Length: 146
Ligand code: DQA
Image (tube, rainbow, N blue to C red; front, side, top):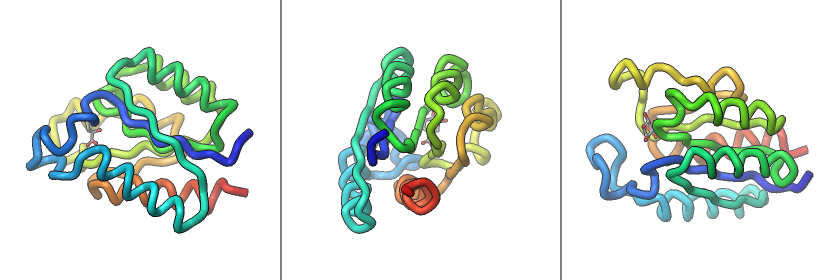
């Protein structure tokens, strides 16, 4: 197993900065990745980044994380709410995965209150914008980078 933490963005997160700015803010995915990179340098851990709009590609990436990564930060976007395939892939990966959402999903539509991936994740952070990814990386590094 490597020393790498994988940062995974699901569907529509490549549209950040253009998409529903009132909910998700002005930062783009590249801005967020740059912040994560700065934090990774500061705490001296390795990260890589993956984004896909496709459920199958996310499943394949998660499967590969089993061999490649020590943990993952995952914003699964809308797949959070219904992808049993992604849930099974997280479970099979046998690495700590922290579920992140930019928005506070519990203040939004009721279909967003359900996370089918939460039971197989190490924890969940939502509602703190891009800061949630940084918090998740810190937790992974402190708890699991041994
Ligand atoms: C999201 C919340 C999801 O409900 C939504 O489908 C997204 C983004 C968030 O980061 O707040 O695409 O995961």
